Length: 227
Image (cartoon, rainbow, N blue to C red; front, side):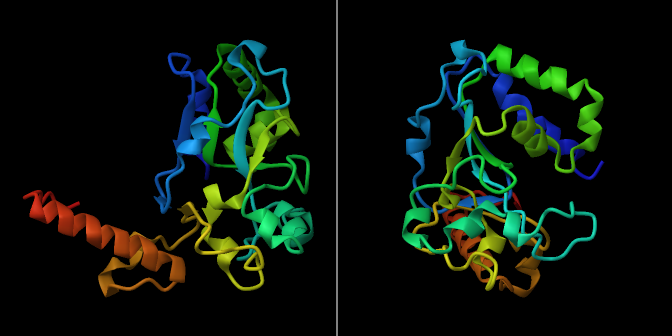
């Protein structure tokens, strides 16, 4: 039940009134333009999910840096796709590891999708099976399973999990100036630290600064809704 709400992130595949959908989690901060995601080559919806470019996403980091006991035992650095890029950090800024590297699991925080009823039907069929009960991470476990190796792996910069920046995790490939979208996974979130006015994670400072700019701009426009 921990990831019950995450199943809703499979919805973009059903939005067939659109040619392309880019889904982002709400705990993200966009730092640079990402319009190019609308032009990434994916399988046409008419291929019904049979091709090798069904959707695009960045890899999940399976390092489990906080050593959470409920995480799968195979979620360790040696099985993390990003570990394979430590010797090629320049390439890591523009290309993700192949979809089959590591455990081959996408992170569901950002997905690029060409909606298709046939693909969504495949997803619904899997959801109706008992296999779903074995998925540790809901939507991304399902997508990594039924479309294993058949998705486009984006570079980390589009879904830059804040933990990748931590020393000893994947700081070898992380470059602040390259990151286009930072993902504030795990707790605390930047907005949880507003009380003392500073972020204890360096990446939180970016969100706090952006939020301060937003509030100042809204105040100038006479918008004071308290959010």
